Length: 408
Image (cartoon, rainbow, N blue to C red):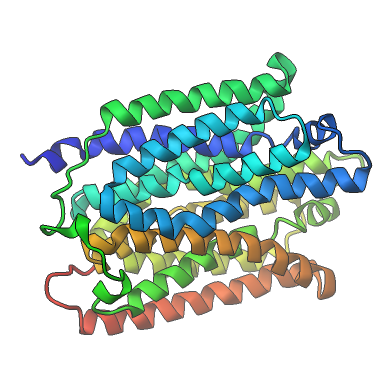
């Protein structure tokens, strides 16, 4: 059995742990970020809110801008090296945030964490390129559990730890846990640099020039952005929308939290199973099906009359969303030569971050000027359009698929 077949499962589980710890660290400060900003000397409600938003969002801005760059470096010098760098950088940055003395240091360190971090996106590149193609859907689906669980549990952990060990102690602990992931990455991951064609890791030309048919890749990047836009579009309106459904005296904030968590929980439960399904029916077919399902589930969300109905529909939508990101990565894995995989998967990460930015902006604008129901209906139409485009492009790509690149 070749080395890549022998080690790919262990690589996947180490990457899952590393992705979970890194994403948890990036999101755990959400509940207490305004308190920490105030502790650093910012005064006034408006200023605290503004600086909190800047400090939180700038990490993802830096990560989105640098993802294609680190993907290119991974293609040239190896994927494990990128994970080691990202994990060590996050451990150092999180620890230094714990000793920040002013708001500018906090913002600078959060930016540095985004620029130098990116473990989760790097893990997708390594797992996608080191896993046998017939297992890629399941492996990427399982890996995505780490990211989704970190996104869900990060704020919960951040709500508990400061009361036990203090605000600064929380950052020190997060840095220490990430350092454990760094050690696991160094000593447990085994990268087969010969997994692709000979010389693939030394390619120096443009990644785009290596792709015979760019339409599938463009479709995947557009779908990645679409997915995050659809998932994040209700974020600005969710609390206000839930307030209309909760009876007088009900806990609006708690219910809104359940609505947002329901989608993540559904995705965590379904991710690996849909990955298996993608390996059987084809990742592109699964993408089309999931986009259609999401669109159909968005429509009744505009007309719910009870909060439990919205929670149930968001949970079902999470089941559908779980199949999209791993299937997108698996499709890119099949359609892109080995030497360009890191770069293109880096662009895929940037597309997701773009959707995370555009989703709340679009949802807030439509909800404020047209109505909250329109947010759900407009997002449903976008998902239907995405499903149609993917179906058309997949059929065109299948008809002229180049020899040597398997159909997803």
